[in-house]
Image (cartoon, rainbow, N blue to C red; front, side, top):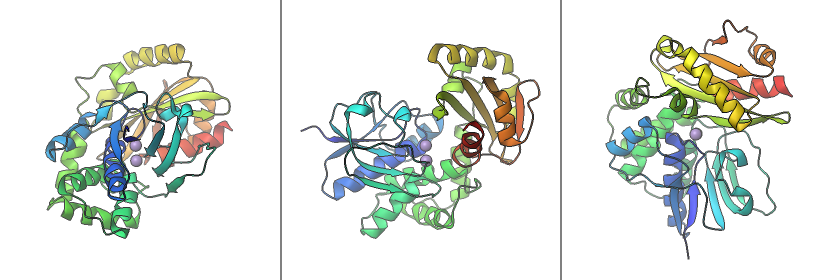
Length: 306
Ligand code: MN
Ligand code: MN
């Protein structure tokens, strides 16, 4: 029988990949027969971690060919495999807002911790299952990535403790130093096309009865990304038209100073302004202190649009 597939969201980030690897390893120890896969190629940051810890890239799929699946680091159908509606979800491990429909009972663990990998660490610990060094390295990388090295407001005391324990399991003596290297590995945007930039880690959200897209890139130099505004605008407007998005918010985050600016093209610009209490100037809005899409961007937009 085919193994049950475990995967994170489309346009996977480091947590989507690492949490799939961790959940699969954990569930197999509990007697299931699962395989971690990815819904897209790993990004530069994730590739840095995979290489650093000598972990093989999971198989990439678009459709699941098993009946039963495990979701990690997401729960919304629009962020999942294309045939999610035909599948049975047996487990969810996640730290996002919940927009999930089910017709059968399942195991669902949601918790507002900094990363899904932090949540999974708790399961390993509870059951006394040892985490291999390479997997600990991936989970550590995911925690660092999702919390921007503990600087995001999504960071909890649990994350501050778990990062130390995972660093020990991964044999990383200085997680700050490793973390900065990891985050910087994801910020070389110069070789990327505008299409790569906007698609990189974009996710779809339903506000009212329309679909909006929110993308985010990490950088150490916001101005160098803003310098590409005209080309970004062209690409975003094409994508809105082709894929039917009502609007596209493209967030550019300075990981060193924990600030963002965003570009927006689409309907209802004033609703974005009222969500953040700021105005657009030449399609750019300043978002001081904002780094977290799930905690600082999606909630005010949800409120403003609904
Ligand atoms: Mn994620
Ligand atoms: Mn995550």
